[in-house]
Image (cartoon, rainbow, N blue to C red; front, side, top):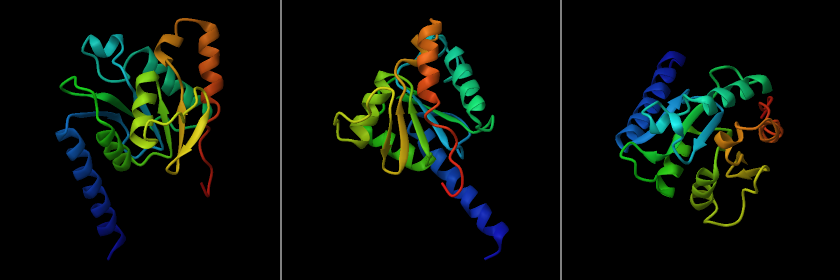
Length: 174
């Protein structure tokens, strides 16, 4: 099979899988092929006002932090822990979305996201200690804490930056 044909098949497979997520009402923004998945558990001010996921100050700050760590500007994807209908994402839906997006690093941006990740991947166990990177099913997972709230103070911003510095881009051979 020619390389171009194989590439088209991979792209079509991914497009179909992303369409499946959208048909379930799962909210995803950014680059589906990125190595970092930012999972937001609760809608923030911007999302409650009708803005798109991670388009507020929290998304801007997270993207800036990733860039400063050495990630490419487009190397991020965001996912909400709520459906388009407003209902909570189930652990099964989170597992499906993570399997589809296949990130190397997952960042739980708040307590609700960390809890859903625990329920989806650790059967609710106490793993995912706040501020520490855990390995979960081959992914680095960072329980960042309440990132959006942390933007209100320079001290808490510095805590978030210290946590994010634990997840620099992975170098070859990964």
